Image (cartoon, rainbow, N blue to C red; front, side, top):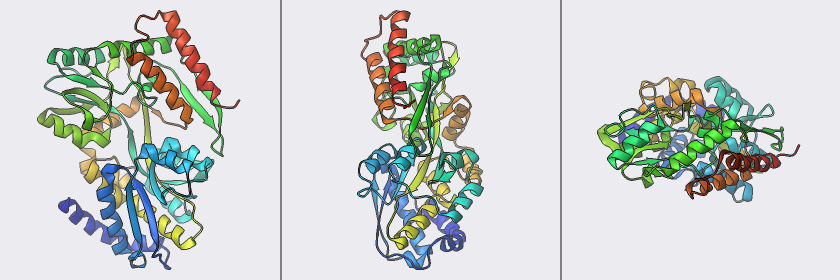
Length: 403
């Protein structure tokens, strides 16, 4: 980390003039609360320290960094906006919920212009709702792919072959199939659709879903077959895994997987199953700023959020935890281009759907379906019975949107 700090300290001097320009000259000496994922706390503190060093008007500002991950931040903010963080990271599919709850400040005009110019178009679109920009993009890698032990898996192109290799070696295949984020790898891959239309205020107004179809039955049967394998373990966290033959996981766990697999570390797009290419969600991570009544505090939040999402900060984040930058110049860095995990997610993106907005109840519904698969409740079901299960799922999913 000292080597990384040395590199970025040099970079931050270049950025200092820009940072000062974005920061309010009045300064702020009060307190800010920042939420980031647990693995991000350390390097975020270093970035905050560099920001304060480059902006003397904020040198006396107290910034408390707390470990609240992207998956929990939005729900916590919506539950109690006032008690929530002033600055927080979250996944882009939570944008509409946060806007509707009044938990996001509109991005300051100059910062919005910089975001548009410096980040990939998809990331700019992801932080925008109804023509208004509400957050600062930081990654384009919020998706999953296959990590595998190349001494175990001889050919990662098919799920059937991967499971056979894992079973023969007594190794585990990890995938979290009781998750609405991961199980779409089967349904979207088989040709199904499940999206929601959202109005400018973040309200769900329509659901587009065709799970109750031949494609849906095919996807569900593939999930059931996977769950029956003695190699299958339901999960997606490398830090909680053992005897990995393969795991469906994301870039955030690259270092953990490397540590477990060593020289046998490998990654690629998801395999095919039953002849179709597995798909999935892909998305973006971003930084939000909570509305403030104190204008000086708001200016400080805007300036810090702009810095934490800058080219320099995104490269620093990549070197610390290997997250893929949304900043165009940062993404062109040689180390980013040569990263095995980011190359795998880039390949997988060709088969993925950019994650839109989904109501909270959808995730619970998907978990219940996956739990039935894992619990062997559907093992002996006929195609007609599986169609009935999916019809109920589809009708329930559609009921979450007002028509």
